[in-house]
Length: 191
Image 1 (cartoon, rainbow, N blue to C red):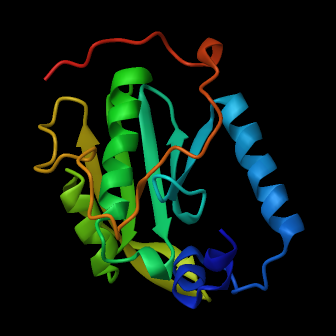
Image 2: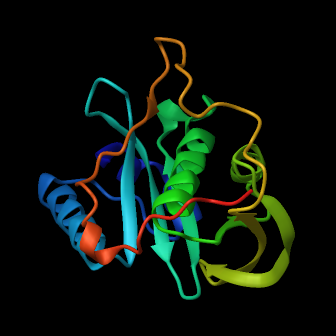
């Protein structure tokens, strides 16, 4: 997590200045994530190596109205290009559809961020359109691509739980257990 705070590409895409990380900032962020989880408005996970606690990125599900949610993600430089983001986003969608009864998950990417657009495609998202001048960073407007995945869409053409090479990390949950009283009753997904 501390590596991500220093990464200029992550900072540029997310609209903040790269910072020197501190243990206090990391602890505050983890506490904020735990609170969001308890409130059931945002569900954050760490993307990490399967048998280690090293965070390689994050994925977050932002709950919306009418059984909609938005997913966002980021991977840190050492983890990029391995397929981790697509695996993590797919696993979060399966959780959203199967455990939270979400019908639609949206994902927004910068139009010029080809890597994130590829993650969306690999994770089974369809492009719905370009939102012109949707986002502003550094005083400049940028186009954004709107992607969506429905609970009735076919799953992506890869197994997100299949083992990767031992040299490659896998997506992990990294978060506390789900507070069942806050989430809708589990329902079977229809395809």
